[in-house]
Amino acid sequence: MAGDTLTSSEYIKHHLTNLTFGQHADGSLGFAHSSAEAAQMGFWAINVDTMFWSILLGGLFLFYFKKAADTATTGVPGGLQNFCEWIVEFIDESVRGSFTSKNVLVAPLALTIFVWIFLMNLMDLVPVDVIPVITGWLGIHFMKVVPSTDPNATFGMAIGVFGLMLFYSIKVKGIGGFMGELTFMPFTSKNPVVQAIFIPINFLLEFVSLIAKPISLALRLFGNMYAGEMIFILIAIMYNAGVVLGLFGGVLQLGWAIFHILIITLQAFIFMTLAIVYMDMAHSEH
Image (cartoon, rainbow, N blue to C red; front, top):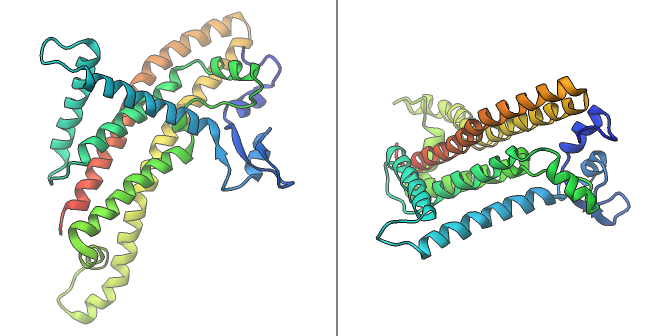
């Protein structure tokens, strides 16, 4: 139950701290026992809970979709096959509507992004105290079960999409064509002297626009999911504030959970759609 041995602020901080493994101040390796200790571990520390849950959910996605593919039939489909076919058709329509070039990688990429992010977001509907209490019995100090509330996860996915975008921009347009987009737009002039003046200005504007893509992609998903998780935690605190507030908190939690189903689906869809659009921009020659 929320707040049994912790104050409200301690409870919130505990639920928002990752299980971090890294190098302690004395040089030894191990898990952090506080948020301050986790921060001291620096860049090379690993959020073990984010890695565990994201890999587990990604594995479940691959397992069930492969199972559906292996057992697919041309007759009356079963529930799993019907569900997987519905998702694949939905993704295929989204790709056809947003991607104007031809690349066999884009549809599988969009499918992976949507399902994987949806599953990570779906963990936000697990009651905030269930898994942390279970892991606490096992001696594990912290356990965040929603990988998309960790900016390391969202930036990792965004950087992956950004890397593919850069790769195909250079592959399709060549280095000269790609650099031309960064230096000869949006301001152009037939006068070579004026155009030379425009080049650094264009590069600054286009470079900022380019870098903003993965940053906005990552922060949008992280911000929405982090805020949703925070609301669930704040509602959970109400359960120890008396019977009346506890009952009111239960109603709020149910209402927020129902509304949050839309949010977790929408965030997965937005990330996928923007990834498709960015890939389309990488294949479009200007």
